[in-house]
Image (cartoon, rainbow, N blue to C red):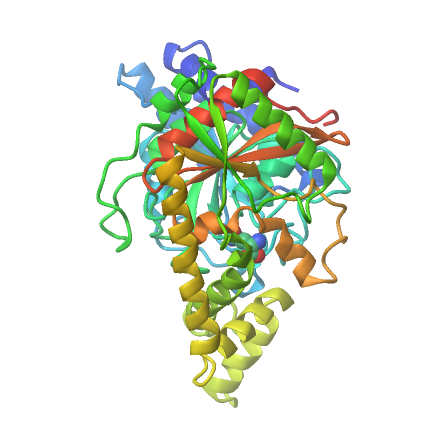
Length: 491
Ligand code: GLN
Protein backbone atom coordinates (compact mmCIF):
# COMPACT_ATOMS: atom_id res chain seq x y z
CA UNK A 1 0.00 0.00 0.00
CA UNK A 2 1.16 3.50 -0.74
CA UNK A 3 2.14 5.41 2.38
CA UNK A 4 0.06 8.39 1.32
CA UNK A 5 -3.13 6.60 2.33
CA UNK A 6 -1.83 6.15 5.87
CA UNK A 7 -1.48 9.87 6.47
CA UNK A 8 -3.95 12.03 8.35
CA UNK A 9 -5.77 14.81 6.53
CA UNK A 10 -3.67 17.31 8.46
CA UNK A 11 -0.47 15.67 7.22
CA UNK A 12 -1.69 15.45 3.62
CA UNK A 13 -2.72 19.11 3.58
CA UNK A 14 0.72 20.05 4.93
CA UNK A 15 2.58 18.07 2.26
CA UNK A 16 0.39 19.45 -0.53
CA UNK A 17 0.82 23.00 0.72
CA UNK A 18 4.62 22.76 0.71
CA UNK A 19 4.67 20.88 -2.59
CA UNK A 20 6.34 17.80 -1.08
CA UNK A 21 3.58 15.84 -2.71
CA UNK A 22 0.88 16.81 -5.17
CA UNK A 23 -2.87 16.57 -4.79
CA UNK A 24 -2.88 14.35 -7.88
CA UNK A 25 -0.42 11.90 -6.29
CA UNK A 26 -2.46 11.79 -3.11
CA UNK A 27 -5.67 11.26 -5.06
CA UNK A 28 -4.18 8.51 -7.21
CA UNK A 29 -2.93 6.71 -4.10
CA UNK A 30 -6.44 6.69 -2.66
CA UNK A 31 -8.06 5.67 -5.93
CA UNK A 32 -5.57 2.79 -6.15
CA UNK A 33 -6.40 1.78 -2.61
CA UNK A 34 -10.12 1.82 -3.42
CA UNK A 35 -9.45 -0.33 -6.48
CA UNK A 36 -7.48 -2.77 -4.30
CA UNK A 37 -9.86 -3.21 -1.37
CA UNK A 38 -13.32 -1.92 -2.14
CA UNK A 39 -14.46 -5.08 -3.81
CA UNK A 40 -14.25 -6.63 -0.35
CA UNK A 41 -15.28 -3.65 1.78
CA UNK A 42 -17.91 -2.09 -0.52
CA UNK A 43 -17.69 1.32 1.13
CA UNK A 44 -18.41 3.11 -2.14
CA UNK A 45 -21.51 3.17 -4.32
CA UNK A 46 -19.83 5.37 -6.86
CA UNK A 47 -16.21 6.36 -7.40
CA UNK A 48 -15.77 9.59 -9.32
CA UNK A 49 -12.30 8.97 -10.72
CA UNK A 50 -12.37 11.69 -13.36
CA UNK A 51 -13.95 14.30 -11.10
CA UNK A 52 -11.46 13.57 -8.33
CA UNK A 53 -8.43 13.84 -10.58
CA UNK A 54 -9.74 17.07 -12.12
CA UNK A 55 -10.27 18.57 -8.65
CA UNK A 56 -6.78 17.47 -7.61
CA UNK A 57 -5.21 18.97 -10.72
CA UNK A 58 -6.98 22.26 -10.00
CA UNK A 59 -5.45 22.35 -6.51
CA UNK A 60 -1.98 21.65 -7.88
CA UNK A 61 -2.40 24.41 -10.45
CA UNK A 62 -3.48 26.88 -7.80
CA UNK A 63 -0.45 26.01 -5.73
CA UNK A 64 1.83 26.37 -8.73
CA UNK A 65 0.32 29.81 -9.34
CA UNK A 66 1.25 30.77 -5.80
CA UNK A 67 -2.30 30.95 -4.52
CA UNK A 68 -3.03 30.53 -0.83
CA UNK A 69 -4.58 27.09 -0.21
CA UNK A 70 -7.17 26.31 2.46
CA UNK A 71 -6.41 24.03 5.44
CA UNK A 72 -7.74 20.91 3.69
CA UNK A 73 -6.77 21.64 0.09
CA UNK A 74 -5.81 18.51 -1.80
CA UNK A 75 -7.26 16.16 0.82
CA UNK A 76 -9.52 13.39 -0.51
CA UNK A 77 -12.96 13.06 1.01
CA UNK A 78 -15.71 10.49 0.60
CA UNK A 79 -19.30 11.73 0.76
CA UNK A 80 -22.27 9.77 2.07
CA UNK A 81 -24.73 9.16 -0.75
CA UNK A 82 -27.38 11.17 1.08
CA UNK A 83 -25.95 14.49 -0.15
CA UNK A 84 -26.65 15.74 -3.65
CA UNK A 85 -23.65 16.03 -5.95
CA UNK A 86 -24.07 17.86 -9.23
CA UNK A 87 -23.93 15.43 -12.14
CA UNK A 88 -22.72 12.62 -9.87
CA UNK A 89 -25.15 9.79 -9.00
CA UNK A 90 -26.98 10.17 -5.69
CA UNK A 91 -29.05 7.17 -4.64
CA UNK A 92 -29.48 7.46 -0.84
CA UNK A 93 -28.92 3.70 -0.90
CA UNK A 94 -32.32 3.27 -2.58
CA UNK A 95 -33.49 1.80 -5.85
CA UNK A 96 -36.00 4.60 -6.10
CA UNK A 97 -33.23 7.07 -6.95
CA UNK A 98 -31.14 4.71 -9.06
CA UNK A 99 -29.60 6.60 -11.93
CA UNK A 100 -30.51 10.04 -10.60
CA UNK A 101 -27.88 12.68 -11.21
CA UNK A 102 -28.82 15.77 -9.22
CA UNK A 103 -28.68 19.14 -10.97
CA UNK A 104 -27.10 20.82 -7.95
CA UNK A 105 -24.58 20.37 -5.13
CA UNK A 106 -25.57 20.26 -1.48
CA UNK A 107 -24.18 23.25 0.41
CA UNK A 108 -21.75 20.96 2.22
CA UNK A 109 -20.50 19.52 -1.07
CA UNK A 110 -20.12 23.04 -2.44
CA UNK A 111 -18.08 24.01 0.63
CA UNK A 112 -15.91 20.94 0.24
CA UNK A 113 -15.20 21.94 -3.36
CA UNK A 114 -14.53 25.56 -2.43
CA UNK A 115 -12.06 24.37 0.19
CA UNK A 116 -10.09 22.44 -2.43
CA UNK A 117 -10.85 19.00 -1.02
CA UNK A 118 -11.05 16.20 -3.56
CA UNK A 119 -14.30 14.25 -3.64
CA UNK A 120 -13.49 10.60 -4.31
CA UNK A 121 -17.07 9.40 -4.58
CA UNK A 122 -20.25 8.50 -2.77
CA UNK A 123 -20.44 6.07 0.12
CA UNK A 124 -22.84 3.26 0.88
CA UNK A 125 -25.60 3.65 3.45
CA UNK A 126 -28.79 2.11 4.74
CA UNK A 127 -31.63 3.08 2.44
CA UNK A 128 -32.70 6.66 3.23
CA UNK A 129 -30.38 6.55 6.27
CA UNK A 130 -32.71 4.19 8.11
CA UNK A 131 -30.68 1.51 9.84
CA UNK A 132 -27.64 0.78 11.97
CA UNK A 133 -25.68 -1.72 9.89
CA UNK A 134 -25.72 -0.62 6.22
CA UNK A 135 -27.40 -3.95 5.50
CA UNK A 136 -30.55 -2.09 4.40
CA UNK A 137 -28.72 -0.57 1.45
CA UNK A 138 -30.44 -1.60 -1.77
CA UNK A 139 -26.94 -2.11 -3.22
CA UNK A 140 -25.62 -4.71 -0.78
CA UNK A 141 -23.92 -4.26 2.58
CA UNK A 142 -20.64 -2.61 3.44
CA UNK A 143 -18.26 -4.75 5.47
CA UNK A 144 -16.25 -3.76 8.52
CA UNK A 145 -12.50 -3.54 7.78
CA UNK A 146 -11.86 -4.97 11.27
CA UNK A 147 -13.67 -8.18 10.32
CA UNK A 148 -15.25 -8.53 6.91
CA UNK A 149 -17.99 -10.75 8.31
CA UNK A 150 -19.18 -7.95 10.56
CA UNK A 151 -21.22 -4.80 10.00
CA UNK A 152 -19.57 -1.35 9.83
CA UNK A 153 -22.49 0.31 11.61
CA UNK A 154 -25.08 2.46 9.95
CA UNK A 155 -26.57 4.20 8.40
CA UNK A 156 -23.26 5.73 7.35
CA UNK A 157 -21.32 2.47 7.30
CA UNK A 158 -19.69 3.31 3.97
CA UNK A 159 -18.27 6.59 5.24
CA UNK A 160 -16.82 4.93 8.35
CA UNK A 161 -15.50 1.83 6.57
CA UNK A 162 -13.79 4.00 3.92
CA UNK A 163 -11.77 5.61 6.73
CA UNK A 164 -10.95 2.37 8.54
CA UNK A 165 -9.87 0.73 5.26
CA UNK A 166 -7.64 3.71 4.40
CA UNK A 167 -9.64 4.43 1.26
CA UNK A 168 -10.15 8.04 2.37
CA UNK A 169 -8.74 10.16 5.19
CA UNK A 170 -12.00 12.10 5.60
CA UNK A 171 -15.66 11.47 4.96
CA UNK A 172 -19.04 13.05 5.44
CA UNK A 173 -21.90 11.40 7.28
CA UNK A 174 -25.36 12.36 8.47
CA UNK A 175 -26.76 11.68 11.90
CA UNK A 176 -30.48 11.49 12.63
CA UNK A 177 -30.29 9.06 15.54
CA UNK A 178 -26.65 8.02 15.58
CA UNK A 179 -25.63 7.35 11.99
CA UNK A 180 -22.32 9.19 12.25
CA UNK A 181 -21.37 8.20 15.79
CA UNK A 182 -22.32 4.51 15.85
CA UNK A 183 -20.44 3.63 12.63
CA UNK A 184 -17.50 5.61 14.02
CA UNK A 185 -17.59 3.57 17.22
CA UNK A 186 -17.69 0.15 15.58
CA UNK A 187 -14.96 0.92 13.03
CA UNK A 188 -12.51 2.58 15.44
CA UNK A 189 -12.88 5.98 13.78
CA UNK A 190 -14.05 9.43 14.87
CA UNK A 191 -17.53 10.67 14.02
CA UNK A 192 -19.06 13.96 15.09
CA UNK A 193 -22.68 15.05 14.98
CA UNK A 194 -22.66 18.86 15.10
CA UNK A 195 -25.31 20.93 16.84
CA UNK A 196 -28.57 20.66 14.85
CA UNK A 197 -28.55 23.66 12.51
CA UNK A 198 -24.78 23.99 12.75
CA UNK A 199 -24.34 22.25 9.39
CA UNK A 200 -26.55 22.86 6.39
CA UNK A 201 -29.26 20.44 5.33
CA UNK A 202 -29.57 22.03 1.89
CA UNK A 203 -29.11 19.14 -0.54
CA UNK A 204 -29.32 16.50 2.18
CA UNK A 205 -32.05 14.08 1.12
CA UNK A 206 -34.47 14.41 4.02
CA UNK A 207 -35.27 11.57 6.40
CA UNK A 208 -36.42 13.32 9.59
CA UNK A 209 -35.97 17.03 9.09
CA UNK A 210 -36.03 18.06 12.75
CA UNK A 211 -33.22 15.60 13.52
CA UNK A 212 -31.05 15.22 10.38
CA UNK A 213 -27.56 16.62 10.91
CA UNK A 214 -24.69 16.19 8.48
CA UNK A 215 -21.22 16.06 9.98
CA UNK A 216 -17.57 15.07 9.75
CA UNK A 217 -15.94 11.62 9.98
CA UNK A 218 -12.18 11.10 10.24
CA UNK A 219 -9.50 8.94 11.79
CA UNK A 220 -8.36 11.63 14.22
CA UNK A 221 -10.18 14.22 16.31
CA UNK A 222 -8.21 17.11 14.82
CA UNK A 223 -9.02 15.99 11.28
CA UNK A 224 -12.71 15.80 12.18
CA UNK A 225 -12.52 19.32 13.64
CA UNK A 226 -10.86 20.69 10.49
CA UNK A 227 -13.57 19.14 8.36
CA UNK A 228 -16.28 20.42 10.71
CA UNK A 229 -14.88 23.95 10.34
CA UNK A 230 -14.94 23.69 6.54
CA UNK A 231 -18.49 22.37 6.20
CA UNK A 232 -20.14 24.16 9.13
CA UNK A 233 -21.69 27.57 9.58
CA UNK A 234 -24.75 29.47 8.49
CA UNK A 235 -26.48 28.73 5.21
CA UNK A 236 -29.34 30.99 4.12
CA UNK A 237 -30.69 28.12 2.00
CA UNK A 238 -31.55 26.07 5.11
CA UNK A 239 -34.28 27.67 7.22
CA UNK A 240 -33.11 25.91 10.39
CA UNK A 241 -29.45 26.84 9.93
CA UNK A 242 -28.10 28.74 12.92
CA UNK A 243 -26.91 32.26 12.03
CA UNK A 244 -23.75 32.12 14.13
CA UNK A 245 -20.12 31.27 13.51
CA UNK A 246 -18.92 27.68 13.95
CA UNK A 247 -17.57 27.19 17.50
CA UNK A 248 -13.77 27.06 17.34
CA UNK A 249 -13.58 23.30 17.16
CA UNK A 250 -10.05 23.26 15.73
CA UNK A 251 -8.60 25.26 18.62
CA UNK A 252 -10.50 23.02 21.02
CA UNK A 253 -9.10 19.85 19.43
CA UNK A 254 -5.58 21.29 19.71
CA UNK A 255 -6.16 22.27 23.33
CA UNK A 256 -7.49 18.80 24.11
CA UNK A 257 -4.46 17.20 22.49
CA UNK A 258 -2.29 18.67 25.26
CA UNK A 259 -3.94 16.08 27.48
CA UNK A 260 -4.99 18.51 30.18
CA UNK A 261 -8.62 18.51 31.28
CA UNK A 262 -8.14 20.46 34.49
CA UNK A 263 -11.31 22.38 35.34
CA UNK A 264 -13.52 20.32 33.02
CA UNK A 265 -16.52 18.70 34.66
CA UNK A 266 -17.90 15.58 32.99
CA UNK A 267 -21.16 13.82 33.81
CA UNK A 268 -21.74 10.09 33.57
CA UNK A 269 -25.43 9.47 32.94
CA UNK A 270 -26.84 7.45 35.86
CA UNK A 271 -29.53 5.84 33.72
CA UNK A 272 -26.98 4.43 31.27
CA UNK A 273 -26.18 1.68 33.73
CA UNK A 274 -24.93 -0.74 31.17
CA UNK A 275 -28.19 -2.65 31.06
CA UNK A 276 -28.50 -3.94 27.53
CA UNK A 277 -24.85 -3.16 26.82
CA UNK A 278 -22.05 -5.67 26.38
CA UNK A 279 -19.76 -6.05 29.42
CA UNK A 280 -16.70 -5.49 27.22
CA UNK A 281 -18.11 -2.17 26.04
CA UNK A 282 -18.85 -1.06 29.59
CA UNK A 283 -15.36 -2.11 30.72
CA UNK A 284 -13.68 -0.07 28.00
CA UNK A 285 -15.93 2.86 28.85
CA UNK A 286 -15.14 2.72 32.57
CA UNK A 287 -11.44 2.53 31.86
CA UNK A 288 -11.76 5.67 29.72
CA UNK A 289 -13.61 7.45 32.49
CA UNK A 290 -10.61 6.73 34.75
CA UNK A 291 -8.29 8.02 32.04
CA UNK A 292 -10.28 11.25 31.71
CA UNK A 293 -10.13 11.66 35.49
CA UNK A 294 -6.36 11.20 35.42
CA UNK A 295 -6.16 13.98 32.83
CA UNK A 296 -7.72 16.30 35.38
CA UNK A 297 -11.43 16.09 34.59
CA UNK A 298 -13.84 16.03 37.49
CA UNK A 299 -16.30 13.16 37.04
CA UNK A 300 -19.77 13.27 38.56
CA UNK A 301 -22.90 11.22 38.12
CA UNK A 302 -25.84 13.00 36.54
CA UNK A 303 -29.38 11.69 36.38
CA UNK A 304 -31.30 12.14 33.14
CA UNK A 305 -34.51 10.33 34.04
CA UNK A 306 -36.24 10.72 30.68
CA UNK A 307 -33.46 9.27 28.54
CA UNK A 308 -35.09 5.86 28.85
CA UNK A 309 -37.99 7.12 26.76
CA UNK A 310 -35.75 8.48 24.01
CA UNK A 311 -35.78 5.39 21.80
CA UNK A 312 -39.59 4.99 21.70
CA UNK A 313 -40.06 8.74 21.19
CA UNK A 314 -37.53 8.71 18.34
CA UNK A 315 -39.30 5.79 16.68
CA UNK A 316 -42.48 7.85 16.52
CA UNK A 317 -40.99 11.23 15.58
CA UNK A 318 -38.51 10.01 12.94
CA UNK A 319 -40.97 7.75 11.09
CA UNK A 320 -43.65 10.47 11.24
CA UNK A 321 -41.36 12.98 9.59
CA UNK A 322 -40.12 10.35 7.14
CA UNK A 323 -43.66 9.45 6.06
CA UNK A 324 -44.16 13.08 5.10
CA UNK A 325 -40.71 13.61 3.54
CA UNK A 326 -40.76 10.48 1.42
CA UNK A 327 -44.08 11.42 -0.17
CA UNK A 328 -42.00 13.33 -2.73
CA UNK A 329 -40.81 10.05 -4.26
CA UNK A 330 -43.79 9.62 -6.49
CA UNK A 331 -42.32 8.19 -9.69
CA UNK A 332 -42.90 11.48 -11.44
CA UNK A 333 -40.23 13.89 -10.32
CA UNK A 334 -37.16 11.77 -9.56
CA UNK A 335 -35.51 8.51 -10.48
CA UNK A 336 -37.47 5.30 -10.84
CA UNK A 337 -40.85 5.05 -12.61
CA UNK A 338 -42.57 1.68 -12.87
CA UNK A 339 -45.60 0.64 -14.94
CA UNK A 340 -46.04 3.84 -16.93
CA UNK A 341 -47.32 2.07 -20.07
CA UNK A 342 -49.86 4.68 -21.07
CA UNK A 343 -52.80 2.68 -19.72
CA UNK A 344 -52.31 3.08 -16.00
CA UNK A 345 -53.50 5.91 -13.79
CA UNK A 346 -51.07 8.20 -12.03
CA UNK A 347 -51.99 6.59 -8.74
CA UNK A 348 -51.25 3.09 -10.03
CA UNK A 349 -47.86 4.16 -11.39
CA UNK A 350 -47.04 5.83 -8.09
CA UNK A 351 -47.99 2.75 -6.16
CA UNK A 352 -46.04 0.37 -8.42
CA UNK A 353 -43.02 2.66 -8.31
CA UNK A 354 -43.02 2.81 -4.52
CA UNK A 355 -43.64 -0.91 -4.21
CA UNK A 356 -40.59 -1.63 -6.36
CA UNK A 357 -38.43 1.30 -5.28
CA UNK A 358 -38.58 1.21 -1.47
CA UNK A 359 -37.11 -1.58 0.64
CA UNK A 360 -38.88 -3.25 3.60
CA UNK A 361 -37.43 -1.05 6.36
CA UNK A 362 -38.36 2.16 4.55
CA UNK A 363 -41.87 0.86 3.99
CA UNK A 364 -42.12 -0.09 7.66
CA UNK A 365 -41.14 3.46 8.70
CA UNK A 366 -43.59 5.08 6.29
CA UNK A 367 -46.39 2.90 7.64
CA UNK A 368 -45.52 3.55 11.31
CA UNK A 369 -45.27 7.28 10.63
CA UNK A 370 -48.49 7.47 8.67
CA UNK A 371 -50.26 5.65 11.49
CA UNK A 372 -48.74 7.87 14.20
CA UNK A 373 -49.87 10.99 12.36
CA UNK A 374 -53.36 9.79 11.49
CA UNK A 375 -56.31 11.59 13.00
CA UNK A 376 -57.40 9.98 16.23
CA UNK A 377 -53.89 8.65 16.94
CA UNK A 378 -51.90 11.84 16.48
CA UNK A 379 -52.16 12.99 20.10
CA UNK A 380 -51.57 9.54 21.53
CA UNK A 381 -48.42 8.85 19.50
CA UNK A 382 -46.81 11.79 17.72
CA UNK A 383 -48.04 14.36 20.23
CA UNK A 384 -46.92 12.27 23.18
CA UNK A 385 -43.51 11.71 21.63
CA UNK A 386 -43.07 15.45 21.18
CA UNK A 387 -43.77 15.95 24.88
CA UNK A 388 -41.14 13.36 25.72
CA UNK A 389 -38.75 15.22 23.46
CA UNK A 390 -39.28 18.34 25.57
CA UNK A 391 -38.63 16.39 28.77
CA UNK A 392 -35.38 15.00 27.34
CA UNK A 393 -34.30 18.50 26.38
CA UNK A 394 -34.99 19.58 29.96
CA UNK A 395 -32.83 16.72 31.24
CA UNK A 396 -29.96 17.98 29.10
CA UNK A 397 -30.48 21.59 30.15
CA UNK A 398 -30.46 20.61 33.82
CA UNK A 399 -27.41 18.39 33.33
CA UNK A 400 -25.44 21.16 31.66
CA UNK A 401 -26.07 23.43 34.62
CA UNK A 402 -23.95 20.97 36.59
CA UNK A 403 -21.40 19.68 34.07
CA UNK A 404 -19.62 20.86 30.92
CA UNK A 405 -20.35 17.70 28.97
CA UNK A 406 -21.86 14.25 29.37
CA UNK A 407 -20.06 11.01 28.51
CA UNK A 408 -21.28 7.50 27.73
CA UNK A 409 -20.42 4.55 25.54
CA UNK A 410 -21.42 5.42 21.96
CA UNK A 411 -23.27 2.19 21.29
CA UNK A 412 -24.17 -0.80 23.49
CA UNK A 413 -22.37 -3.37 21.38
CA UNK A 414 -19.33 -3.82 19.18
CA UNK A 415 -19.69 -4.61 15.47
CA UNK A 416 -22.00 -7.60 15.18
CA UNK A 417 -21.92 -10.28 12.47
CA UNK A 418 -23.76 -9.52 9.24
CA UNK A 419 -27.31 -10.82 9.45
CA UNK A 420 -27.37 -11.00 13.27
CA UNK A 421 -29.99 -8.28 13.76
CA UNK A 422 -31.90 -8.05 10.49
CA UNK A 423 -34.66 -10.45 11.52
CA UNK A 424 -35.84 -8.28 14.41
CA UNK A 425 -36.05 -4.53 13.74
CA UNK A 426 -36.08 -3.76 17.46
CA UNK A 427 -32.67 -5.39 17.93
CA UNK A 428 -31.34 -3.12 15.20
CA UNK A 429 -32.93 -0.03 16.78
CA UNK A 430 -31.13 -0.73 20.07
CA UNK A 431 -27.80 0.21 18.47
CA UNK A 432 -28.75 3.86 19.00
CA UNK A 433 -29.79 3.59 22.63
CA UNK A 434 -27.09 6.04 23.76
CA UNK A 435 -26.97 8.34 20.75
CA UNK A 436 -30.64 9.20 20.21
CA UNK A 437 -31.15 11.51 23.25
CA UNK A 438 -28.69 14.00 21.75
CA UNK A 439 -30.60 14.09 18.46
CA UNK A 440 -33.89 14.77 20.22
CA UNK A 441 -32.24 17.60 22.14
CA UNK A 442 -30.34 19.01 19.17
CA UNK A 443 -26.93 19.21 20.79
CA UNK A 444 -23.59 17.99 19.47
CA UNK A 445 -22.12 14.54 20.11
CA UNK A 446 -18.88 12.88 19.10
CA UNK A 447 -17.67 9.30 19.14
CA UNK A 448 -13.98 8.74 19.70
CA UNK A 449 -12.28 5.32 19.86
CA UNK A 450 -11.60 4.41 23.48
CA UNK A 451 -10.48 0.79 23.47
CA UNK A 452 -11.13 -2.72 22.23
CA UNK A 453 -13.47 -5.47 23.32
CA UNK A 454 -12.68 -8.92 21.96
CA UNK A 455 -10.39 -7.24 19.45
CA UNK A 456 -13.13 -4.95 18.14
CA UNK A 457 -13.30 -1.17 18.60
CA UNK A 458 -15.36 0.57 21.27
CA UNK A 459 -16.33 4.23 21.09
CA UNK A 460 -16.80 6.81 23.82
CA UNK A 461 -19.43 9.45 23.26
CA UNK A 462 -19.12 13.05 24.45
CA UNK A 463 -22.32 15.11 24.46
CA UNK A 464 -22.21 18.88 24.83
CA UNK A 465 -24.70 21.76 25.03
CA UNK A 466 -26.04 23.20 21.78
CA UNK A 467 -23.44 25.38 20.06
CA UNK A 468 -20.73 24.17 22.42
CA UNK A 469 -19.36 21.71 19.86
CA UNK A 470 -15.86 22.84 20.79
CA UNK A 471 -16.18 21.24 24.24
CA UNK A 472 -16.73 17.76 22.88
CA UNK A 473 -13.69 18.09 20.62
CA UNK A 474 -11.54 19.08 23.56
CA UNK A 475 -12.57 16.06 25.63
CA UNK A 476 -12.32 13.67 22.67
CA UNK A 477 -8.86 14.93 21.72
CA UNK A 478 -7.68 14.57 25.31
CA UNK A 479 -8.75 10.94 25.39
CA UNK A 480 -7.17 10.34 21.99
CA UNK A 481 -3.88 11.79 23.27
CA UNK A 482 -3.73 8.85 25.69
CA UNK A 483 -5.38 5.94 23.85
CA UNK A 484 -4.16 6.85 20.37
CA UNK A 485 -5.76 5.93 17.06
CA UNK A 486 -6.88 2.47 15.97
CA UNK A 487 -5.89 0.43 12.94
CA UNK A 488 -7.62 -2.75 11.79
CA UNK A 489 -5.23 -5.71 11.95
CA UNK A 490 -5.91 -6.95 8.41
CA UNK A 491 -6.36 -5.06 5.14
N1 GLN B 1 -30.31 3.88 13.27
C1 GLN B 1 -31.24 4.97 13.37
C2 GLN B 1 -32.41 4.74 12.46
O1 GLN B 1 -32.45 3.72 11.88
C3 GLN B 1 -30.53 6.27 13.08
C4 GLN B 1 -30.31 6.51 11.65
C5 GLN B 1 -29.62 7.81 11.36
O2 GLN B 1 -29.03 8.45 12.23
N2 GLN B 1 -29.73 8.24 10.11
O3 GLN B 1 -33.26 5.55 12.31
